[in-house]
Structure formats: structure tokens, C-alpha cells
Image (tube, rainbow over all chains, first blue to last red):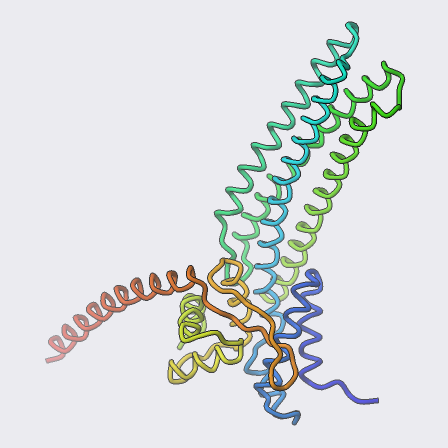
Amino acid sequence: MTQPSIVAEYVDTLTRELSFDIGLANRVRQEVEDHLWESAGNTSPEEQRRAIAMFGCPHEIAAQYAALSVWRQTRRTITVILVAIALVFVSMKLRMSWYQLLHWGLSAHLQGVGSAGLVIARGGFLCALATAAIGWAYIASCQAPIRWHAAFRVQLRRGLLLCLLSVSTLMISVTAGCVLTGLRLFEARTLASTAAIPLMSVAVEFVLIIVLIAAIRRAVYRMAFATQLASRVD
Amino acid sequence: MEGEMLKGHLDMIVLAALSSGPAHGYAIIQEIQRRSGGAFDLAEGTIYPALHRLEQAGLLTSRWTTGESGRRRRIYTLTRRGRDALTKHRTVWQRFSEAIGGLLGQAGHDAAQYSR
């Protein structure tokens, strides 16, 4: 069995440190490997060690990448939230238009519940939109630093809190919309083709919520990883 | 030169090294060493996160090519925004350098007078 080269071991260590971002780890692996072999010039262990010494500590370099990766993930998360909010808006509008087209209203004794539900759905939606807009502006104002530091972590954590708040209020809005749809279907006692559009729109909205929760979870995971990495370097 | 001092100007250094044309990471480092006369003692690996950051900021673009060795290699190019940023950095640096030069020159002159 052939021994792995010193360069390969070094690149393995570096990419292992970046395992929280697979795409980044793959890119870094190829780029760094090319650099080290070009710097070493040949396969002698001395030249490989010299190239690695000049390249620097893998943990330190990984920590620099981590700051960028978490910043990018947070920015991506807030952008996805804004897109999802736009899609939820289209979905809600489509459902309401469908009800109007079919003159599909709630009966008199459910009008109160319907009005309250509508207020919750609209209020939740507006809160989600406002929080996401603030979050986007806040995250856009943050610049990725050269290396991970406590103040940057606090900034990103605030950004993620705004993301979480936005998704939570959007979830309330979608749930209220789902309850109202349920009441309409219950009253009409139908699951026929007329119900397909409301049901599909509610399903799409819930899928979007799941996507958003997954995006926030990924950002939180990367932040935890980056913090751990930075604390090891310090 | 001090590592921490260099890190503060890393973006400007990388943009300046790319001003002569597209290059891959190792060539950028070579260019920095050549132009600085080997004065910058910076861990080579530090350049890559900087390149990545500058690309994210829209100051650089990059693409994969295959080098003579057959290994994949990422080539970086300055964008228009990158060139503008470099011009801005250059102006700020020249003003700063003149100001510090004046300050230190005056301090040197005063010290020479005192010592007489």
C-alpha cells in the first residue's frame, strides 16, 4: 500500500476542518492541492514540508474561510426568506381569487372566526415581510471579516434572529390561512376538484416553511462550527 | 513587514497583484513577492480566503481551467468594480503615505535639532 503524500495529508486536514460546507471544502481542496504541488516543485518530502510551512496552519486558514462561509449562508438564508414570502403572497392571492371566483364564502356563524383568521394571516404576513426586509438590510450592511471574531458572531446572530422571527410570523400567517381553508372545506363538505387549488396552495406554503426552517438550521449549524473552529485557533 | 499590518491591507495587495491580468492563486503570491521585493512575509494560505471574499464582494470573478500539470486550477480576474476599488484604495493609500511621510520627516528633523 502506498503512503499518502504529506501534501495530501495536509489538504485532508484542511478540508476536514471545512466539512460543514461541502461545496467550499471541495473547491479549497483542488485549489490548495494545486498550489502546494506547484510550490513544492517535486515530490520530495522536504520540498512538500517547505511548501506546507509557507502555506500556513490549516486551522487558521479554515477559520478564515469559516467567517466567509457563515456570512454567505446567512445572506443566502435571508434572500431565500424574501423569495419565499413573495411566493406565499402569490399563493394566498391565488387562493383568495379562487374563492371570489366561486363565490365561496364562510357562512354567517363563522364570519367572526373568518375575520379574526384573516387579521392574523395578514398581520403575520406583514410582520414576516417587515422583519425579513430589516434582516436583509442588516445582513447586507455586515462585511465578512478577514477572520472570525466575537463581534461578527454577534452581528450574524442578530441577523439569524431576524430570520427566525420572520419565519415564525410567516408560519403563523400560513397556519391561519390553513385553518380558514379547512373551515371552508368543512362547510362545503367537499374534497372535489374545486378544493384542489386551495389545498395545493396551502401545501406549497407549508413546504416553503419547511425549506426556510432547514435553511436557518443550516446557518445555525455553520455558525456553531465556525465558533468552535475559531475557539480552537485562539 | 508585520503580519497583522499586512492583513489590514490584504484586499488592496491582492487587487494590485491582479491588476496586470488574470492569474491563479500561486501566481498571485509570486507577483506580490516580486513587486514587494520579498518584503511581505505572509502565510501563503491567507491569500485564498481573501480571494474568495473579494469574489463574493463582486471585485473578482473566477473560473476553473486545467493547468499544464493536468490539475484543476482556479483563475481570478479583476472586475470593473474591482478596478474601481483598487483606484480608490490607491488614492487613499497615497494620501495616507504622504501624511505619515510628512509627520515622520518632521519628527526626524526635530530629533536631529534636539540632538545638536
